[in-house]
Amino acid sequence: MPSVTDSLRATAPALVALVTGSPPASFDRKPGPGEWSAATVVSHLADAELVYAIRIRTALAQPGGALPGFDENAWADRFGPHDDDPHVSMARFRAVRENTVTILDSLTDEEWQRVGIHDELGELTVAALVQRLVDHDAAHLDQLRAALA
Image (tube, rainbow, N blue to C red; front, side, top):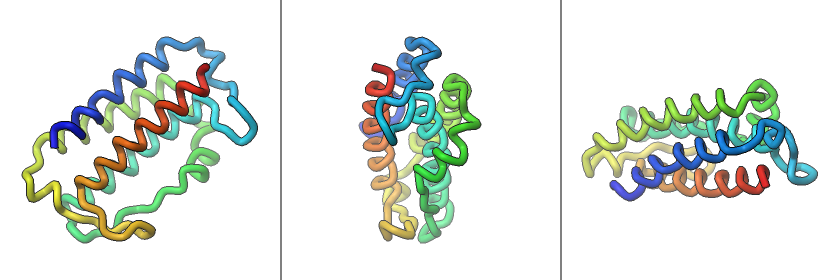
């Protein structure tokens, strides 16, 4: 499924451009009450990348295996304060993303259809997981742009 892997591949340069092209002080400002700062968004992208990497690998190596849930607000509250440098969060994101894309590039048609069982969403194929990740990237890149504006 080259178009989704191309989309996943494109996220890292977009993230690099936003992080390196913005003044450091802009990462701490919250755009509004209850909204995430840009630093928290970048941290979240890195955390989500870890979770999706586990989900994809589980569906591939243990078809029918349990895919972990992910309360993004709980993770942001717990781990975000430890990710105060968006460059470090971005590096973590990039390392995991590059490895995941390498794995996805190696998949057979049959492997794209392997499934895992998500505790809230039920059965998800690798293809569906990757599409969810593409959509997740787009939503949070838009959120990051708004937080940095």
